[in-house]
Structure formats: structure tokens, C-alpha cells
Image (cartoon, rainbow, N blue to C red):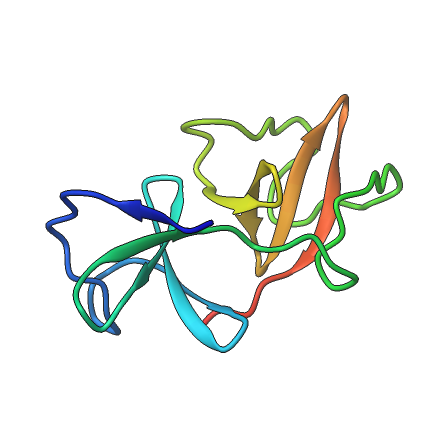
Length: 114
């Protein structure tokens, strides 16, 4: 089931100012904690990256976090863009997904920026 973002007055595109990510056969835009997909008719769909072999959702406690210091905690306002992934939110750090998990970050795989 697709969720339509109602009353979205921003037109996403190559020069809209939001981070563009490759998602399957199309491009989505990271905007306010959501992945927005612009349809040809102007409607905006809410998307999430699927859990997959490329973007798993398991624990990687041995992951050496780069892109921030070891004391950094991901969450709203942490300075990294939130990315919907499966049934949770990850954070975009140096082209890959970090997921806060206890006292470490899990590596949930790369994201292809466009």
C-alpha cells in the first residue's frame, strides 16, 4: 500500500535542495525525515528503503563508525539526515545508513546518492 503525502506544496526535482537517493528504478528525495517520490501527476508518495542483502537491518556491533566521533548519538536533530528503512529510521552518514543500537551504531548498508 502506498501512502500519499497530502498537501505537499514543494516540487521535488534535481535542483530542489533535498538529498536525492536512488531507490529501485527511480529517485526519491529526503525531506523532513521522509523519502518523497514525485509522481508525474504531482502527487508525492512516501517511500522507505527495503530491508535487503544490500541494506540489512541486523546488528553489526563490530562496525567502526566513521563520519562522527564515538560518542555521537543518532536521533532527531543529531545533524544526520533520517532515512526510512524497513520499519525504522536510520541516519545517513558518509553514504551509508547508521542505526542507533544500544551503545553502538549498526551499519545498514550503502545508499546511492544521485
